[in-house]
Length: 174
Image (spheres, rainbow, N blue to C red):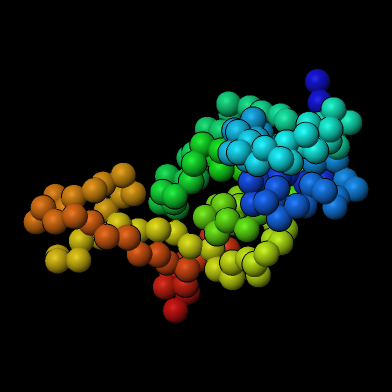
């Protein structure tokens, strides 16, 4: 059993691409799915394997309950650009209360929604948390994130966002 306080940082693929794992003195965690995403970096794989064998990087999996909770929030905010690896690292970061190291804007958006602390390396990060909303450009009707076609006029739906402050939308605060 791994202690939930074992790590300070949870690494997304972008953290590996930026070389964070090579410069951190802290123990880091990631998931098997994220590790698979970066396995194409063959020349640096031996370095990663060394860090894993020395327990500087631990490959862990989030609980099914954590995955379920993250997917529930994804549905609520309408975020459609997240891979299974993204979901896994967000869930692991939340479960272990680790700082999530990423430059992926979709991951940052969800992490902000879940109150996960972020460390951005190559970008300034995101300013606003966004909720994605599907709508019909022709008739203006709004739809849930899973809908693809307007049930009124049959047109393909588009996506727009609302900026959120805390748990309220900017539009609600005007």
